[in-house]
Image (tube, rainbow, N blue to C red):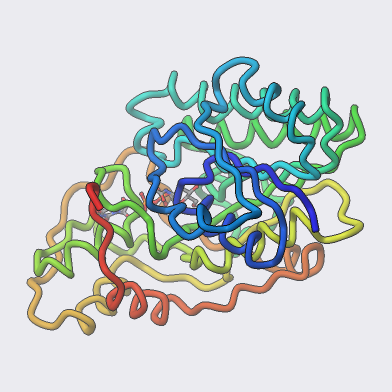
Length: 317
Ligand code: UD1
């Protein structure tokens, strides 16, 4: 049993990761500042004796290091972040603070207090557009947004610390994560969460561009499992892997599946493509299989059907 500190524990990926770690018998110290995380995401975790929570801002100088000094975790899973490509374009300074500076604080806390392993929420956005698909980890990195650039800079910072100070850093390049608890209430929310809510309300969705752009959508349940493996699997060395399914889905495909789940909802509307938007994103999953023993299990259509039958999250719930 390990003690694992999870930043962004009240968030979408953070809360699922926390629940799984607890279910596997680990102790979890969760932190969140509730900028985008929500207390009710931790409702199940809060009932577990192995869970402790601290309301704390990982981007506040010294805050994380102080907690790490007291808790002495075996690993830190760093998920707290600004998660939207579009929000990084609207607010690049905030993107720097939350997606680069905070990573430095995590690296520094791990160095000072000898944390053996750091798992970092990286992104497919580091590759940018125009790479050969499915993209492998060694492909050229040409991010096309402040968000992608920040995730790449953080990988380099953390891996540099790993090489210099002997900790193990695992960078998890998430593709497009979806599932329960993804907050649909902001224009910066993930597309599936927005579509799920609109269809459930009987309202047409908006597709930016022609809808032929594609993504490798991965269920949050699978991502939580990948995080568990990266944090606890014995003998791992530092590295970066795609956390993806290797399967491609267009936005038009999504609309077809939702259309079947919600017959009678009007056809999607179209609006101009968004700046910084990648056209095609598809990952090669082989390295995660080889290094972590991870294979995604949930098919997109099954994940969407599950979402359609679950209550749709609302900002006040
Ligand atoms: C997403 C993630 C990001 C992750 C990256 C990895 C979110 C908010 N962003 O970025 O954290 O690192 O994948 O690849 O989860 N779209 C519409 N209509 C809408 C909303 C979106 O057509 O109402 C389109 C967008 O223009 C885009 C696609 O859907 O083409 C996906 O957008 P989005 O869900 O925001 O994710 P990414 O930008 O791919």
